Length: 363
Image 1: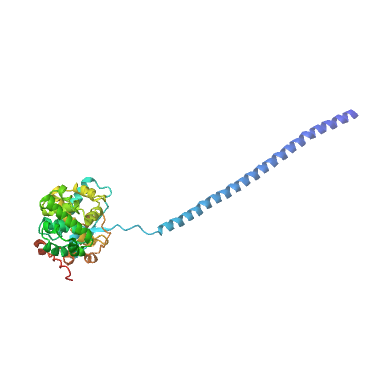
Image 2: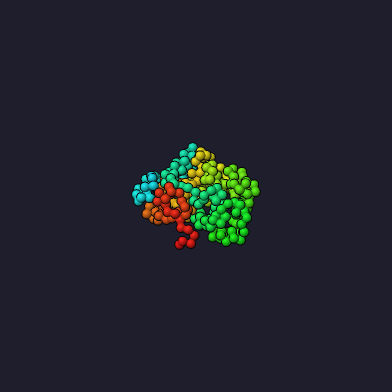
């Protein structure tokens, strides 16, 4: 009887244990589920927060970028493209419609450069049909001496000085035998008068001793004379002997670089580069056209762009005054109504309205 009661008690305990075990399992599962749910909610909140922060950051960055862009937009505006007139010769008379945009020929082909350069020369020939050497001379000897004296001074000052010189020393023999001090006194207004006196007396002696008192008509002979370089030689050859040559003076050098005919700075290289763009027969007149344009319109510091006959062909248009009326006031010599360089200019120049220069000391 006692045994039976013990057995029943054990069986009862055994039945209770699984139930307890099941309850504990259910409780553990419930707790695990709650923990998972809590972790998921926490993760979701973190993700939401991260997302919000992520969205806010670009917004702030964008605002900063926008502020930077605004600062860039407030920077100085790009230089305005300058517009040139179709035909600026009309602007000399007062009309000013600007219609053709000038683009720098940075990628200009060789063929295009040749065409543009030759067109510029043709345009200048129309504006300066009476272009001539602006040194007074009656023979090759006077021209070579005057050209040597023109270094570092104006043709006008040379023209005002040489009448006294040639009146006293009319031939190479006379100047070769001259007293240097007397020649210096005559040449004083030209500047560098001591060096120039030495050159003109020296070249006169060379003419007498080596060439029978005559100016040679060959480049290789002329450059052997004291004070005579290629520029002086080509002035003499082109204007006293009718042999083509390019005169690379300061005006010529400045303008051909401004027009982008060449980027060279050495006179000999400029001569070769520009000479290759034109037939040889054009060289002498080309020199006159370019030099005249440089003296009268395309000045070094303030070119008269608004009165320029070749504005549509010039890549440097706009460097100077573009207003037609203001530009007209910058014109020099006959274009501006002023006397030219020569005391005794050719008749064609006078017929075109040019005025002879006054003699030395004439006010």
